[in-house]
Image (tube, rainbow, N blue to C red):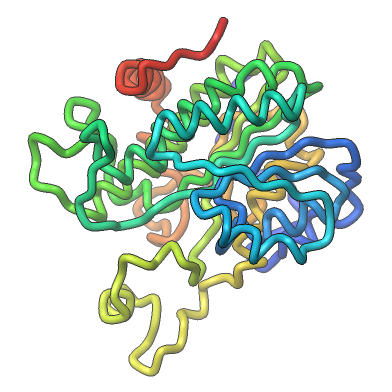
Length: 321
């Protein structure tokens, strides 16, 4: 059954932390995979889940950097190399995961790049779309048998309020026919993330696999590496003195909604929704602040199906069965 895109009664909110959300949750014996779990939000996501007893496996584009961050962290944490812009790296990673685990209980597609200059992968695909969406699509397809083998798996896909920057042009997803614009390109990938969760949940529900899209909130993290300080001041993220906007979250707060979607019993039997501030997000209207809310296009089931078909074509990968 489709889950309504409307808030529920959650005890957590904008300032809740990942540790608070995970408190009292026993994840002993659970296998959790987190992409990019060694930087920014990913680090605090891993910390909370490993601290609750899960075995957390981190896919890392820079394994050496991941070891420096994670080796001293409490809990059972493993690291494997993963470059989401490289199909061969994804396949090798997934083969190693399958050799290690017989099931995945929770998959968190956390890794991303944002507002980068025009870059293309070896296939010629625009790098934000290739990394943020297509890489996670291929990875999830390869790991699909492990998700189905779990007893009620969840897939959490990091989207963003950036989806409100614009929709998704499936006729030109790689910016070959248009002049590249980094922010609309980013917004398109975040729309794709939410639409992927919508369609994945629709197809996964009969297998006990539920999917959620997450807007973590505004947070200062390495995700902003491609932006100058002047750009961030112009957008209102910082004032002229370098103080961060009061609405921004700490990294611990920013990881909370991902963890909430991964473990909250309030989401049992639910899925396919876009979540923010540790709750199911509300649909946006003309009065909704630009930093929140759900745009109608990411609830478009036909667009979600069309994106799925396009993703299969571009990756050459289909979900087994």
